[in-house]
Image (cartoon, rainbow, N blue to C red; front, side, top):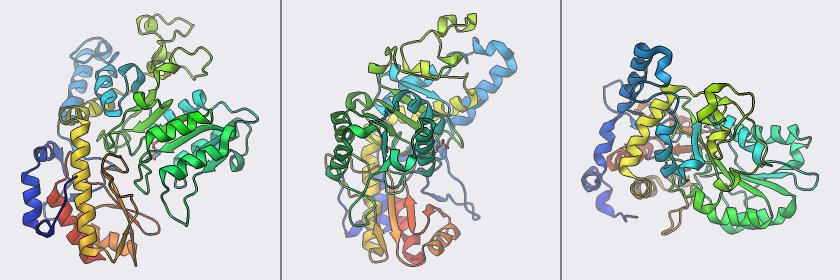
Length: 427
Ligand SMILES: Cc1ncc(COP(=O)(O)O)c(C=O)c1O
């Protein structure tokens, strides 16, 4: 990661960093919301809803045109027929998460996929029934695991266990995490972690989590709502059993965009694995023959239920083109520089008014992505209001957390400098 010095604590310094950035111009491929004065907002909520890629309009329009021209025949005709449309995304999405194409599919929404995966990967017995989640789990994920435990006849108070950081901290070390997984031993059925964590921005070590889960005989899955399109991922190599993610944050697919799912290939042909099934999961060759028996495709595609919304898939296809042309290695490298710069500016200019919650960057390890969470001392809500007035879009979580995502595809060093200027005067 770059290092910064006094000269970077100025608008000229920020612009110099932008001049050295070979991916600076990708920001021109995105629509920024404008302030009342017609200027680009300082948009730092890509961890919540990413900006609209300019090519999304044309990609969606192409499918509207196909509908207009072909009606139902659009399933088989046109440049991108709808019957195999999800396949046009598979290879690029597989690269984003480090899976094989047969392990990755775009379908449904995130919480739906999480439940579908738990149908297959949470199969509790009387002695092995616990699910380990983070201490600060996104509420929907907690509702999902609680309801799965109840569905299987367990009391969530006993079946759902949360990580316990020491001394009231929000994050915990990899060693603490491993020792907590091991301490539950063979009572653990599933380890299911959000990576990065949605509130702290902490990224757990995938390899260590998987190895610890396997050592106690548990399944392991990741919720990559804040990981996909953000972290450098290697799901196949790290042998996650499953993963799910949404695409409307770092993957810029638009509000309510479809989600992704990964199932490791070692599970594709397991005849004992339970699964909820629908017609989009049966063999493609015979799908429209309407046979009463389901025929597995021996790939993650067999977890699909329904024919997917094509306009939504078109929007993700548009965004994936940008990820593919820049590549996740470059995005992560720029994301580390932007996040490091934002952190350095915050410490330099308002270090005594905030506390940085997200773990620090560590060379050679992935301890965080492009998200910085800070605790604001004093009236945090008022800070959020002041930021809004100044045209800076960040987000606030009760009681005192500000979350900011410097997105390598479209944020600049100058954006970071301007944001910290506003934060400095607001705190
Ligand atoms: C960590 C996490 N889990 C689950 C969800 C819920 O996603 P969805 O509404 O797409 O099911 C979100 C959405 O913000 C999230 O950030």
